[in-house]
Image (cartoon, rainbow over all chains, first blue to last red; front, side, top):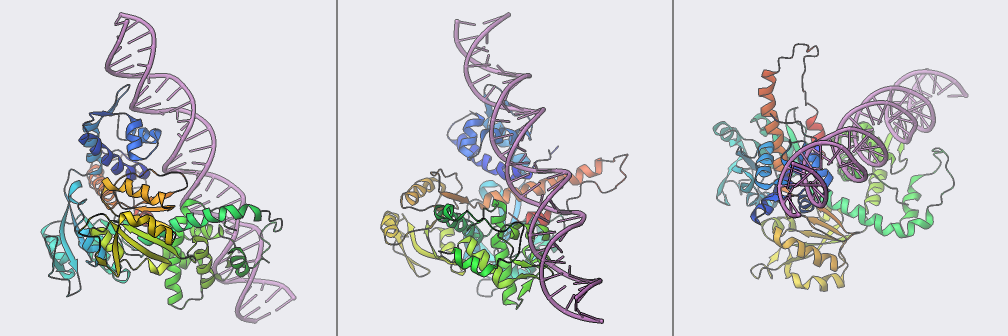
Length: 240
Length: 240
DNA sequence: AGGCGCTTGTGAAGGCGTGCACAAATCGCG
DNA sequence: CGCGATTTGTGCACGCCTTCACAAGCGCCT
């Protein structure tokens, strides 16, 4: 029976798994929560709580059996079942994703590549022929598709998502910079390089302002939102 | 003055910004929290609370001025300052990232490309010559590097990170599947395709087991009739 | 066999984030 | 000028996640 895992825990399990694989290759048979936590870049208490949600697979005074834990996590994540992945959109990014080695190493199999551009359809990319998006239903009929990866421009992403959903896909990984609307029961995860860069930018901006900000923080006025303060000068006055 | 924003809010601001740019192009001059929230794929209350952290830039009964809000968010994120980005590792993924249009569109400028492979160094990729990683300090001396993007295999990533830090980089975006250790004050964000796939895999595994479980759970006292209903998953999963 | 050191698993507390629901504020219209 | 429609900004409650601290359990050594 599958335990009900907190979402935050689920997001960390793959990281633990990768660390465990490394440890196994290095010859470790057991590992303490402290070691594994360090290898995975988290707090040891958090790691223990995460693993405790899977059940008691550790031995007090000793640690966790590496091989056993690998099996458990892989089972919980459903990685022992092979899942078919299709990739839609073979521009720069899609091309790179098609050649990504990380697919096969975790039980994922690229079943097909799709695009709509006649220049790209028919090309052979990393051993697979790019097919036209119209053929997606055919491919899905032959072999159920578990996960669809969208690497198209933003304006085509929603219609691709609709096609994927219609083909029975219940998990979508979206690299297009847009919001997808999908029916309930379909899981969408988004990866956006630009967003990550902007978050980094924010932290740098904050750090660089932190020094001078301390001198300005003594704002006496404004009790409760007396809206006389207008925004434009705020933006410009601060930007030094 | 830069307000102290909750991390969750910061992570959503770029999404709001993108939605606002779309609205501006579509000719909207003002937008209500409801509209903007829908466009950004979030709850309207959450959006209002997020924006309230920046200050009061809306007008009750009317909504938000699109142009003003764009300026505010860009200011807070530090996007009006152009930041130099260097990209290390030009394999499949790095090659695609070098051609990513999203860099320039948000004020980021690719300052240089680096690799260590003699086959790759010297190549011209999307208008830039790939330089040897050894030259990184030289480039950093000419023009301060804000952000370093690591797209190398895992085994080289830590040493690249060390080099970047030594060159004064304070923000790192890591595509390598490994944990980086960096000194305090340096911000690392990680993007891992394999992790995202595994999270999707988990949800599918859970769903497929829930179906079987639902058949077995003939709960006698079930008044509500709807057992474990996860229709909101899709909406929440949008925020990665 | 017994005690000691080590490590897991977990109860409890605190912090953070989310969403509801409503008061405050603004605009347009009669 | 006043009123109603509309929308923002926010107090509050709730739930999730993190972290601490420690009891419970296991193996080893004497």
